[in-house]
Image (cartoon, rainbow, N blue to C red):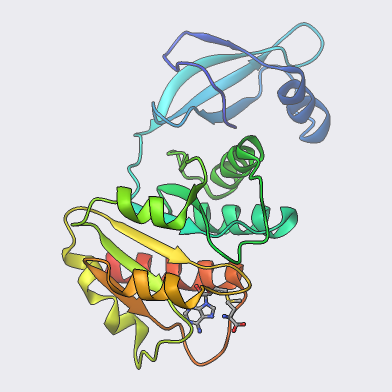
Length: 235
Ligand code: SAM
């Protein structure tokens, strides 16, 4: 369970209504029961539920896991509409993305991105898959501004369905030796405009990657490329 509070042995963390309801009514956990909690900074802790009739507080008992640190793989993407965006954010977190950067491209179909909703999906995915670090949710920026701000020594993995890559995993070998971190970019359902592709291909440290001969939906491409990157990094 994610709690937005400092965690230390002997400290007491108040539960908000939703958390109390989730523990008491959904998970049907009574007072005295132990749960595992994290706050995204201080590792994982064992805590005991306390309260008069229903869960009201958590009594923090002991640390159970040290804080994990995600590899520096920032996922940049053209935002999708609601449920698809929820799915994409959750999968990117499960695949270990350290940051989520919405980039607004010519054919992006979405005007406004709900950062709060994205952050709630980050927390839900982290709780579900046991990641203790929370991916940063960045403000949406236009593609060219994002490119202009990127640190040039970072590797940019540009997922381009117009590319031809015989062996994507082998093509991703360079991610292993990148010191300054990796940015992974997936475009919108309508794809990148020609001039955007041109601009991307002129970027320093660009790795143009095809994920195979089929056109994938953007959220599928997200899972595919991030799984590949994590696999190569983990080798
Ligand atoms: N331009 C595509 C078309 O012709 O239908 C639509 C873009 S695709 C639905 C959405 C994004 O997913 C693309 O911008 C690209 O980043 C990524 N993508 C989809 N299929 C891919 C593939 N086979 N290889 C690499 N990236 C892919």
